[in-house]
Length: 295
Image 1 (cartoon, rainbow, N blue to C red):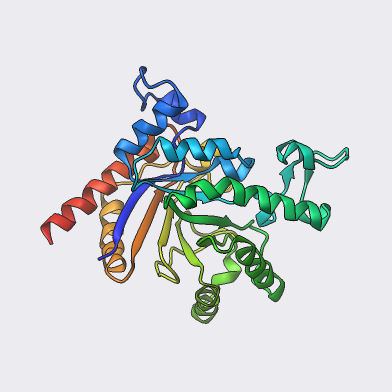
Image 2: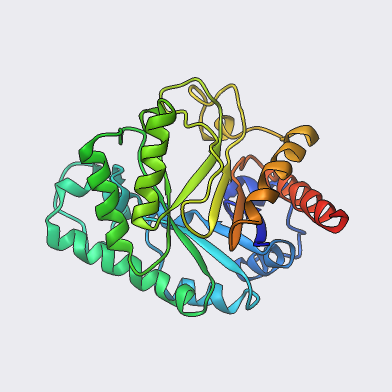
């Protein structure tokens, strides 16, 4: 049976720091990561989506965590086709422009190549230490299921190699019916990429059904919650959701059989409003442990 790792999609966001989850004595970046790593075996690095951290930062993370700790690293926004603030690009690569944001197509290919190099340099210490789970490629909601969309995904996966990747799709066109879903999942199998299953509100154009399947190892599952403000609220309201005991138990029943067929299952709680993700992750972890002990 593959190992089931449960954690959260951040350990240092502003709302978590203000929630009181960390004791007052744990008040440094090093202390917070160490405290988190004592309680969970995996974390998703969210900051790398907004800007590429320095190599010294990833080296420090490696040093501050146990040997068997795992980081899933979200790819820098520019690399997955999102609009990116100019001031979040590496300082020496920022274009002279009056625009506040740019996309990959706005930059010379040579600049994009260097951005990829910087991202790989940042991830390298984590990968070299054996602590990299996957690079999470979270594609934008406007990436629809077309030949061009598939080419974009394949190209991005190729640029990540040899790093393992998980692909999160955020448009319903990839899963309109059973046939389309099978085509999408087969495409990811052929790429050697993990399909990122997402538990999220349903009913909007960007909703993706929570299909739980392994297209590569590890299996990756992200929990966004079911906030009624998903389409209309700010970031805090979109993720303001507390999972019920019944919901978590239902997920345990789905996760365990998949773990029996996989090398590892990564479960990340992303309902990051205050310390709710940490609370729900701990509850889910304990339910999985209790079920495993009783088996």
